[in-house]
Length: 351
Ligand code: TXA
Ligand code: MG
View (cartoon, rainbow, N blue to C red):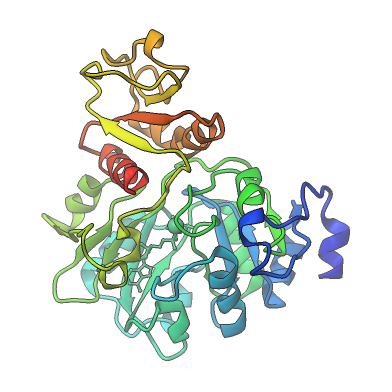
């Protein structure tokens, strides 16, 4: 750890966020750029946030139970919510899973490294805490080269949820991680902004037929081009969250502090809006009249969904920070990355 302290060039903040300062001892959080030092830190059982192509992950050695326990503690995350295990290449999976069905392998052939998590029957080497007691483990090979080099250098599979306090907005820059978890984790490896900007698509092979547990950065249409039509887990907002098929399906998630309302992009709002309303939109929308809003964020004036996804969480944070009375968010077309974007909107708006 001492080496990391020397290698880290900037200290942006060392105080824990006020909300949890009583619950957690304060830790000095470093932003660093040195992969070898960050890997040493992981090997020493410490928590290191790192960039992936989807969002920043909060990493710990997946085989070290006390390090994994600190992930849950620092995020304030319930232990019924399993963690994704990140590996550098497929050879690492031999120790982690007991079955890798041919269809899952086909998806891996096509989309790894990349924003796809495969849930497969776990071996005894994977601690139960990682999978929240489930018999299957989520595995992913990230496309971001910094992430893969870090995992390779650490030499251990890396358990990593998104690096944000539980139920908050996912981080797509090192500063976002610092804002949410500064003072609670050991280091943040700064690799610049995340290219995809939405979490991985999670496909489970734990039951007889594969099923999409969470739409994400790999469009479902691309998955179906390999698997054929595939089932999608239904989330039931009225169900107890601990009973949901996947914790990514928690009804309230990715949530800003201010209330959010999701509307059809083509229609102007009916009724009166609060004086201080913010708008999150895309493309050129009929409902984006600048007179109605104190602040507008247009994710991409051409409505390109890839660019919208890359900007989405940062824009949601910026609108939240502007502290409007309400955020109005325009729904996306329900196809490609629009499916995952709409999923995030719906959960961000849930109260
Ligand atoms: O892109 C991503 O997936 C990012 C980066 C860091 O890799 N990680 C991420 O982790 O979004 P997290 O913990 O925020 O979301 C993990 C999702 C949850 O929806 C969880 O239910 C699902 O993956 N998941 C993980 N392991 C699972 C398992 N064994 N069975 C079912 N679902 C699982
Ligand atoms: Mg998350």
